[in-house]
Structure formats: structure tokens, C-alpha cells
Image (cartoon, rainbow, N blue to C red; front, side, top):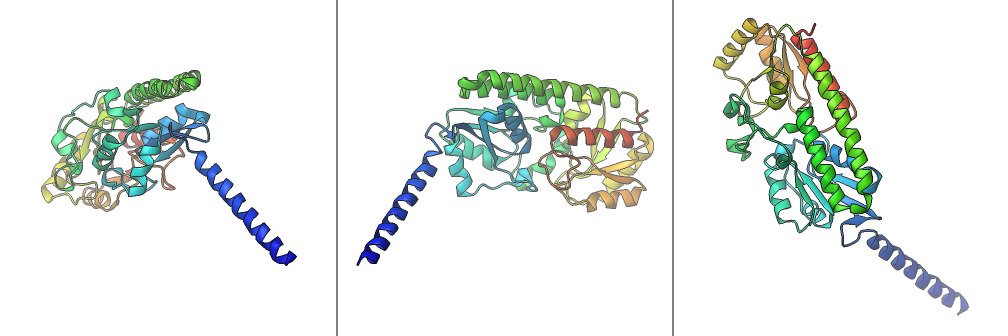
Length: 317
């Protein structure tokens, strides 16, 4: 009898401990969008995640809707991810890039949201219909409001960083000083990156480059370069014979040496064109995600690798 009573008492105590633990675990996420006392931030994809982590620092917990290796434009949210949005205290996204994310964030009842596209200007570059056709039409993606790849221009990205810093100060005023300091530090790094690009690309043998994914319009315009896309439907699309002929002519006229492909797309199209035209292939990373194939561990490192690749391909002096 005493043994049974002991077993029963132990089981009851165990259940109470488990119950208390469960309550404690649940209480770590509060109703005001905080987790373990930190502002819970959900970012749409890597360039937004990088800003949130660098500016938020130790005062935020950051998760991303787009996992490494996933093509951001094609993202479809799972119910769990949609629910995660409503638990957040701050949402950071880039409207016009991921339709499924735009819709979910519009419906999320979160008081603090930032659309990075509203913090700078989305320009429409020459040949925009061709340049951004890879995300339009059949697959439902549209960039009619302008080229959304603003993070590939360090100047525009710095403008976005400044806006995100101010938004975090408003969302979490208790740590406003830290957010302000972190923002200033990051903006300074981006200004240095801009200076490196200006100096590194100031004197080159050619200003033209060919790429499978025409996401470098802002970068090209910032530094006086000319971007030529292989095909319009998708980064993996096979170029037509007529387009190959056009690019062959361009390569000869502008002394182009390299066809760039990206880390998250198949490189067969680039290799096909390079084989037909006698050009080399290399990676120019659109920085939509960091994977083991990325030429660096974060935005700054990959952008420096992109600069080195451009310098080599363009014949920097």
C-alpha cells in the first residue's frame, strides 16, 4: 500500500512539474509580440533578415519565412508560417517580390510592419519588360511597380536600413538607443561598400555583363554598367537562337568575357550560351538567400565577392 501511494504521489508530482513547465514555455511568448523578453521579428527573406538581425542585435529574435536554398519568388506559405506572423511584434518584408507573403502580411494583425519598398525608390530600368519578365506572366509574379531588387544597390539598401532602424525604435522604444547605434554602424558599412564598388568599377575594359537572372538593374545603374539578360521567362529559361545571336554580337562588340549565373538556379542556360559564344561562366549572387554555395557568410561578404567577380569579368584596371 505504501509503495502504491508512493508511486501515485510521484506520478502526480511529475504531472504537476510537466504542467508548470508547459505553462512556463507558453508564457515565454507574450501577447505583445515578445519572446523571452525580446521583440519577435519575422522577415520575409534573407536581405530583410540580415537588416533585422544587424539592427535588432541582442534585443530581437529573428525568423525568416524563406529558408536557405528556397527561391523567394516562388514561396508558398504553410499554415504554420501564417500563424507565426500573428505572433510577431514586427514584420519586415519587400512588397512586390513575394505575392504569397504580401497577402499574408496584409491580413496579419500586427501593429508594426515595414515594407522595405516604401523606404526607397523602385526604379524601372531600360528594357524592364524583358529584364523582369522572369518573374511575371505565367508564374503570377509581377514587378510592374519597378525593380524590387533594391538590396543589390548598397546606397538604396542603406536607405532601407535607416528606415528599418526607425521602425524598430518605434516598435520597441525601450531599446531605441541600441537600434539607433546599430543602424548607424550598418549604414557606415554600406557606405564603405558603395565606395569600394565605385572605386573598383570606375575603370574597366567593358561596362556590359550578361546574366541569367536580371536582378542587377539597380546595381548596374548605380555604377554605370549595362546588364543584359539571357531570357525573359525565368532564370532557367532556354534562350532562343535569335537571342543567342544577339548576345554573341553584343559580346564581340562590347568585349564581354563572362556569362553570370546565380546560386539558386540551374547553371545549364549560362553554360549553353557560354559554349555557343566562347565565353566563360561565373557566379553573380543575387543574394536572395545564403547557402553553402554562397561566396560568403553574410550580405557584406557576398557583395564583396560579387564585386571581385565583376572586376574580373569586366577587366578592371
